[in-house]
Length: 470
Image 1 (cartoon, rainbow, N blue to C red):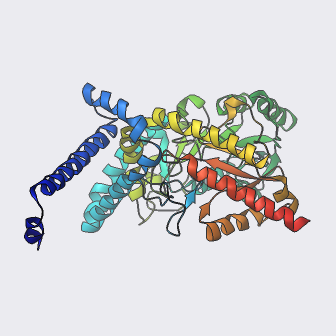
Image 2: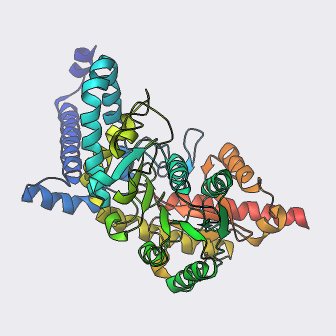
Image 3: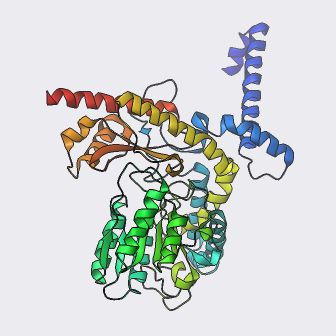
């Protein structure tokens, strides 16, 4: 049939078809070469590096970067469909690139090929390679860093281990007004279990400078000398505030207080040098911003606490050294931890590293904040510029949301569910100082289009609520 069809084409038409086909083949070939060059951030070749730096601002961000991810976002210029989602929440669960998922799947295939071989001979070597790579990326001595599954596990085993070192009438400091809910619950439950008091520090907005935080922090230690352990965030979850953890750590050392930092949102978002902070324990998730598969977080523990720190589970290496205790925690899927080094060092660096991410995401976030404020006639949570997170900001929703829903505990979750089920929109709704707000977050493949849709959706919902209240 093909030969018959071709025979009916005159020579002129045949040349046109061949020309178009040749152009398409050449275009695809050139595109593949350009993509390969744009993803060559780790190359040592100066020529390749030159072309990488030239192409990455065009091909390694925005719409074209979606080639590296599975996310189903609306395509240009088509409107949102049933099979696509407007996603403007990347802080909760993160997103894993296709190449990292493939790497993890290959690890799992290697495991299943011969489980005995993998678990008894291969796993420890691969785990250690990944762990050392991650330690280098976050500025931590490898001997001080261990993997856990998530920050919830990390804060639980940290508190269990350290509260056990306190004495009767000692207290733990909690930044309750800005701390993550699960962390607050862990402090309350475990402090009660160990008969330790909880002292709250109430941070209120606006914050005009980091000194506002430092002064309040030190006042607590002066007024409550019973405080012997302090838990504080690097980046607060709901309000998106970067706290001055190095200075807070110095205050803790001054008053002989154990410092535990909840850095859930920091790895991959901030340039980290954990050793320089001189805190006792630093915890961070790798799945949120460092492109690592779910179920991988870090615990960086000062050497003086190695002997005290115990994992969540009692296993074979319970009486072993710090690294041994946290390595083998029964039979489970270690592929995320083994893949972490690849995600942090290979993928992130290939697309251009944190410098490239910071060149695209923060300006986009700044644009979105201005859009929301203008569209909704509202304001951002007031903090100084040097305390704003690069990939996350928090903007108050129109006041009508707070007036209608008040402080109903399930209101934010119900609204998020409504938007997801009825509008295919994944957005974070939360409460900051008794006002309903949304946390703005973006990824390297985000575009203005998604945020325009969300801005219009929230405005439409606000207008509907105002009509209902008439």
